[in-house]
Length: 301
Picture 1 (tube, rainbow, N blue to C red):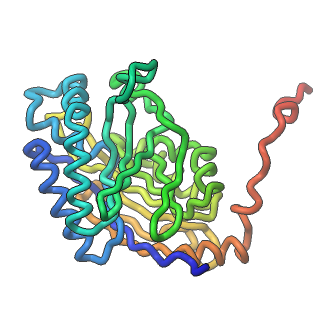
Picture 2 (cartoon, helix red, strand yellow):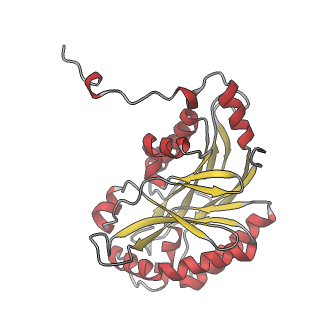
Picture 3 (cartoon, helix red, strand yellow):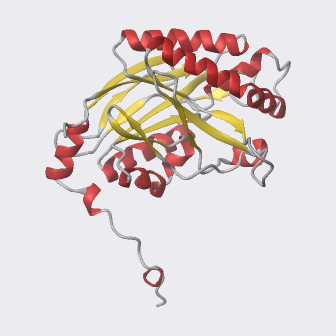
């Protein structure tokens, strides 16, 4: 079987702006997809909660509850707009995440809000990864519920995983995806402080090192005083790999300028990972230790 071909990835440092509702977001996304395709990208990723900017068109003043209600109501239409952009530009698309209400028959889960990242194929097919671990803002103010366990997704370049923002800070979540075959972890993020951004950035670099895989991050950027949810957005995009033979000495493959609206293009080759896993200075991927038995975790003196 032939090895997967390299993937050209467009990481958008997504500027939060007061767009004209769903139509305005769709037009903005279409421009970005056109630019990504013109630069040779196979897949475009935006920051977590990027589409929440649509609330600025209809919410008169910053209001956390009103913004959540508006965006969850608009989620189905937003997904359709995203699918149309992917089809129009024949582009794989991870357009950030959306808070979505759990649908279906009346069960205990019905009505819960989950943070979902849609991965959309060029033919419009869509699959979702839900955020597993909630930040304090999500849990305490938006009342977003933890989602399904980590999954992996089939693409022309092999299996890919998605770890939404805070999830990247928990090694077992990403390790589960790597053990299931993912060679690339995509991390859309939204952080309102440099400390928060650095937690995501440093965790992404650590996950790439310890799993000998690629991890790519794409944040929201900019100030939006008209939004209670997206008022401050800090960070830059980046792509990281193993810190070993055949890779940069710090593992950084690409990065953007801090807090700027910018598209970062990076080409990721799965074959380079196979080589370093087989003959690196270390074999982190293979040497991952088994869980420590509970009896070995605590020893009285």
